[in-house]
View: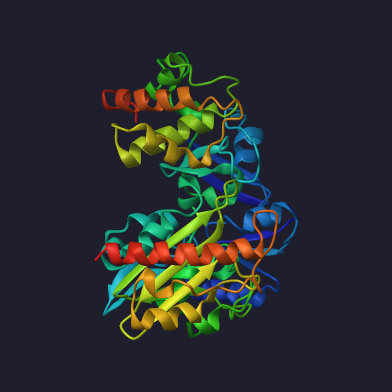
Length: 161
Length: 268
């Protein structure tokens, strides 16, 4: 077993884990943060995307021990319970950016990462290119793209990063 | 995934010692090849030595007339580095086209080269630009480094520390991506170097990355897509699979080389 200490959604967490534990397993099974999903488990679909030190990564292809000493943010960390949603979450709600919802946490975490890297004014082509690593099996991309475009603009006026 | 022990050395020397001490130990940095392979139980190293916390191992800098990229520099860092963008823009754009944004936040140049996947992008750049792979033990020329499918000159306790790229006069990389995996079905890197011209192909060769000497000869006289018109690449020795036949890949090598030449010349 390996002892790890990291920050998850702003809270310090310490745990003993088997080194082969994937970050996504650790989040879901140890911390019960089940918003992060396992879709393909082969780093292609992006349902498992979380932020590691502020950057979008696939938590199914990252070991929990590799996150030792680092900071992780999951979909649960975007807005406090009962508080208003993060502007990107709100945009997905407003623009029907989800159908079954399975890919949504990964889509939203990726979307926020896109805004961090590319700014608040995103054209549809850029959004589609940047969604390379996120799959929606409902194929509801049209509204996902519309949601990200609106969410990116809304983030400019929000305190939530 | 089978059990393993995880090590996080603070220096390359410590990492090398761990490799010597623990037989069959594997080096990990971004983990974007090794972890999937371990999940499929195609690899079961009893020890993992994580290089990602060794300070300075991801440095990108100019040294004399060479661009030097540290082994743990991530694809996203190479893609967005102003130094790379200035020195070898084709290398920055190659890095920016690997996998997807999340993969680029983890995958490293050293990992890609140590793995030497026959469809990886970096080997084409390293071979075409005539880069030198620097390890904790020695310096390896690109030609001696790549030794076939997933096979390199690296010894069991040898660690890539950096890659030195001499600056080309002109260069470009064009790849034809597999629609599903986004790996290169064929990728061609062309480089006009001060002394010669190199054309390196990834994705197509059944023995990994290789150079197309017939193209290079013709391009030495004239570095333009017209110069290689009519020169056929033989399909022999190329991959044939559900994604494309060897003949199709041979055809693509010609098409992509011409596109890469046009792109290299368009950049001025």
